[in-house]
Image (cartoon, rainbow over all chains, first blue to last red; front, side, top):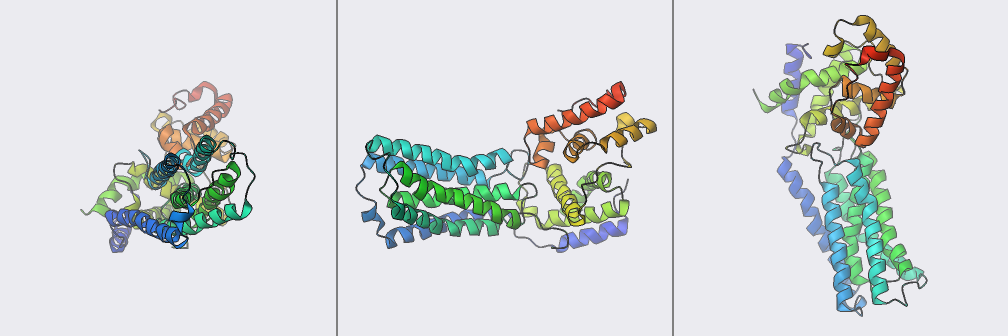
Amino acid sequence: MTPLSPSEKARLLEQMRRVSVPPRRIVRVREWIVLPVGVIVAATLYFALNGPEHGSGRPTWLYAAEALTWVAVAAVSMVGALGHGTQSSWQPRGVLLAVALGAPAVLFAAMCALGAAAEPHMAGAGVDAPRGIKCLELTLAAAVFPLMALLHLRRESDPVHPAFTGAALGSASGASAGVMVEFWCPVATTAHIALGHVLPILVLSALGALLGARALAMPRIGRS
Amino acid sequence: MDAGEEVYELLAPRVFTFLLRRTRDRAHAQDLLQETFLRMTRSRNRFARGTDVVLWAFAIARNLLIDEARKQREPIDVERANPEWPDALAGKRRLCDRIMEQLNRLPDAQRDAFVMLHFDELSIAQAAQLTGITRIAMKVRAHRARQALREVLGDELRELLEVPT
């Protein structure tokens, strides 16, 4: 069965030839450039808010362990959110869900464990709302750029589950921004970690899902 | 032959059959085929080398069908007067009609799973990725569809109902 007549086929091929898109390599480079730019934005916020002094007072081992945990989770979640499946050009939904929900869960568990190991008497202390909200705002502020930039660069690219991809990008952006906030914040109580460090990642994940469902989905008929 | 034409020659017949099965209208399937190829061209820098290009094309085509069904506020119309039967059913017109009748009684998700596995000749892994569900969920949907068909059609479907891997 011939799908199109010779003239229809020739017209389609001509239309396809006229479509201009940047090469795949350039697209990948742009995506990965977002990350160092995001680091610069986060570093600017860190120094503007007197980070080196504000974040001091923790034992060196705790400082190092927290930083390593956040960097590792941020790197893994970013690779998971930006990567693709072995068979398909999109990530399986399970991987995206693991990034969207797994990153905040792992960070919460790890930070609580580290906090309890360093200051057992402080772990169960109540929440200091203003400090928690400050960390929450800082994480959101540092994560907005990478999230928006990645959603923009990946627009109209996901044929299967754009909302899940958006949620994973939100979570990965939040975890990446959280590295800087972790350097900045010396508080390690469970309530503070939940409010100031994990909640913003969940908020970004939800925001990513909402925006991703619109921005990442392939254009609808009549919209292109 | 340029790259676009090569891709067209490779994929157009399969994508067209995929669309024709779901639209039952040759002209409509041709329109959607052209739209699918234009979408693929626009998103070609998003295609990951080394992954399954057929799956990618089917995903884009399926998206178009879903969008259109939403726009028209109608369910996805799968496999009614199917012009493209698998070889196992060639020449068995009455059986085909009975399968169609039963398929149309199934829930959309089960019917879609059955058609993808048995008519579009996708593997369970491919069909699962195409619909964004797990392999287990795809197996369950297909199993339920087969079970429903088997209850009505019995052993006549033995050959068709072999599970693809």
